Image (cartoon, rainbow, N blue to C red; front, side, top):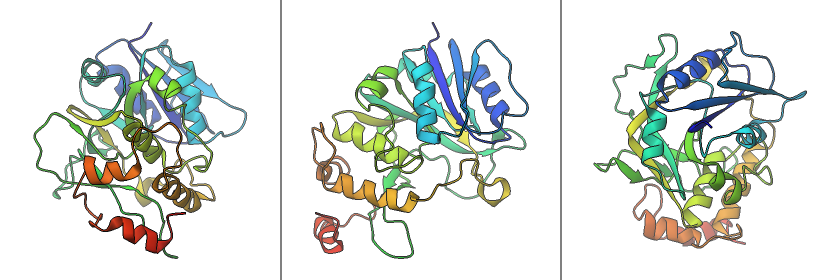
Length: 290
């Protein structure tokens, strides 16, 4: 029985093999890797008894790919990662040793220099990313309506600390929590791709758990941009899904939650950027509240 299952939703990424090899090298524990291939087989392939592949007859999309991989996972704990990430030494061991069952953990995030497979050297002050705040939901014709995670520099020294949101490229939890509390990733309202981090983050915080950044370990994520293009193409309806998600959570429509949405903003993370003290009046004026 492995200590950790690492699940990778994959679609046409040239760095999949390097990601798998990095996981096997740096997990620091008995690890298995499960890769859902949504279109073309990775080139090169990694053949190792610890690596398992799922290849459906037709693409299933990111959310179902994660669900399929977790269903196959044998370990108590799993980490989801994009197929273009590198990891710090003993990342799996560190996350397991510091975990609580109703937590979702995210490692500290750096940018990846994929060509040289190392943390990217940068002159700006963006990295490392430890915290992401939730951007206030706005309505307009020229932008996405939903709430999204935005990098947030905070002067906090806690090695394991509360985080309002995350990018979604890497997260860690128990398989039991994913299956029996989150009930997997839902496509209802969200579609195949959008708002993965918001669904997990809101369900966790408002359901009585916690989203934690663990600065004791790290991963480096490739910002694909124009150079590499998207591996998972955004399907139609992504903008609408983000608006649906914002309305769903602002109106407290998720069943089984122990906190209202306003608790997260006013009590858990007061003073979060983009949220004015009169934010409730603003969302009413914008027509978010039903």
